[in-house]
Amino acid sequence: TQLLEQSPQFLSIQEGENLTVYCNSSSVFSSLQWYRQEPGEGPVLLVTVVTGGEVKKLKRLTFQFGDARKDSSLHITAAQPGDTGLYLCAGARTGGSYIPTFGRGTSLIVHP
Amino acid sequence: SQTIHQWPATLVQPVGSPLSLECTVEGTSNPNLYWYRQAAGRGLQLLFYSVGIGQISSEVPQNLSASRPQDRQFILSSKKLLLSDSGFYLCAWSVLAKSQPQHFGDGTRLSIL
Image (cartoon, chains in turn red, cyan):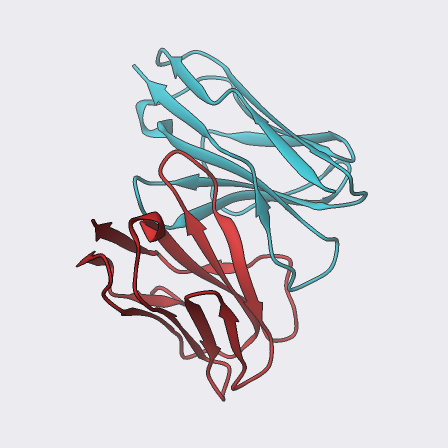
């Protein structure tokens, strides 16, 4: 059983469209991270959210942490081809851990 | 600033040969260090992590081993590679504290023939 469920697994859209990626769990997390990974490279940290209900914006990307700290979403406005990549969420269980839990990722392709 | 170096970038090895992948971190002390394997375009499988020199925890029983001979050096090894060891291997570090985000190297693409 995957502790962090990401949806959708795959997303193929046209440039200019909006999209939302979800990261859900039945467990509570003390913090949650979003990463973007391009082919042949390592994941790059986009954001960390730590407070229930928190919303963070990074240019056209909006990240939200659920009130109960069990889920998170990533919304991209007016997607661009440069947004193409694998988006991964990762969470740290409450009580703290040296080992994050990763979702399986959402593979996004933005066509020009 | 902190940097992480991982090499080689690509490696082609025959079945049964040994393996040594190296990862070093600069600009920080006492980091947590991690080795992951990633299937094509999918999530990460944690293989090993270390919270200090000589301290290695294994998450998945397998044909691989890890060592941390120095504070900022993490090595992934195998005595005899299997076909199933093919994959994309990622090294990562985080601050030595719980619930911290990770910072990844650029990965090694390992192909076993």
